[in-house]
Image (cartoon, rainbow, N blue to C red):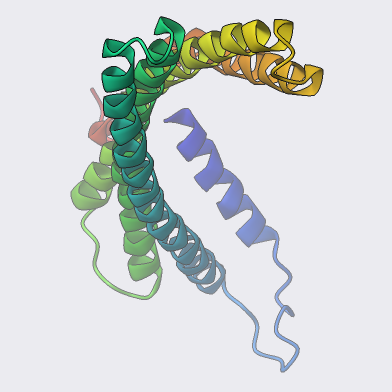
Length: 226
């Protein structure tokens, strides 16, 4: 993405601006050393994010299993006329939201893993290793594509969240009218719906920007004339 290219350009500019007396003991630091340190540190940061992404997948799966069990329970209760239809609908919408979240969480792991690999390969290069340009480009491209690929699923997940929040607010207002739920709880659910709708609108509105931003080709990177 252009974002990645600008980021790398900015990092190189910062590296070139680093004073040669950075290390107090007297050894002047080189640009390659600064970049090696930077990309090593960035790789460690992405490595941590990869770990957290895996944890998030496990969390979403646990929530999915819990809410799926509640859905099955509510299906049985509704069949016996023990709960109103809206309670079943809320459970169904929560289950749908969880499933969309799982798709996003899994795709986010793919994206972060590609970014982690790219940072690691660059650190390897600045450490003196031989990293083929084609391999590094392919690694970056996987990350760019994965980042764009999860966008539509994020929009769908936000839409599912908004649908769940809207139905939850509807139920909250019903219970509030009966005196069974506080005004504060209704206000909280109104806020949740507003947030969910805003997230959906913003994500949906930005989907066409991802692949419209120039991905440099391998020829661009290698400086080959078209």
